Amino acid sequence: METMKDLRLTSQSVDQTRAIGGLLGALLQPGDFIGLQGDLGAGKTQFVKGLARGLAIAEEDVSSPTFAILQSYSGRLTLHHADFYRLVTDDELYATGFFDLQTGSSVSVVEWADKFPRALPDDWLRVSIVSPEPHRRELLLSAIGLKAGERIAALQQALFAMGTAPFSLSP
Ligand SMILES: Nc1ncnc2c1ncn2[C@@H]1O[C@H](COP(=O)(O)OP(=O)(O)O)[C@@H](O)[C@H]1O
Ligand SMILES: [Mg+2]
Image (cartoon, rainbow, N blue to C red; front, top):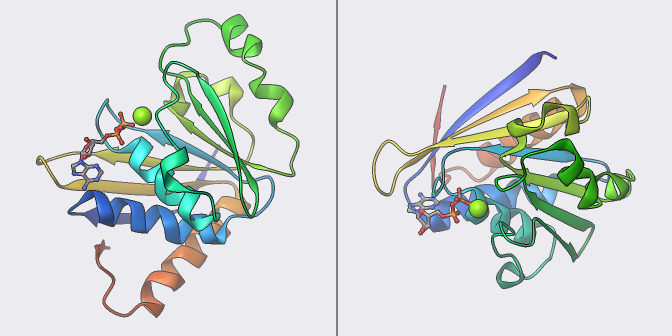
């Protein structure tokens, strides 16, 4: 497991977090896997709402699947949205049917992805979110694998193409 490329972004609002997710969502391709890391309230679900927007899925359909554990939405691609927070054992994870959905034709996004390292594919994009201040969020996007590295490079290009992105890009 190797980190190929990192991109660090700062968001000052929920809208900016969703906008970043939206740009990435628009670039996703079948089989892509996004793993989200960050404390409760970090903004993981807000980011998924943005991903949904980028995949032509209604944002309001996306809610925290903490209780359902797994939800799927259809758009330009089908998005499977899981939250590992309440899962404790591997058996519980298997019982959700999560692995049956990893077919390569859809996209998956998982909150608390790092809880089950063995559930993660060889190639995935980690988004880790920290909140140094009430409304500010630092998003670190790291590629584990070549495909994820391509998505990060494309996101960086999309951000530059926007000129003054509504969020800052730190080196
Ligand atoms: N810049 C920001 N980005 C995302 N969420 C923010 C931001 N500033 C404040 N928030 C608030 O933080 C909370 C994030 O909630 P949520 O996305 O459900 O977190 P998580 O899924 O990580 O537990 C929301 O209440 C949202 O309004
Ligand atoms: Mg959440």
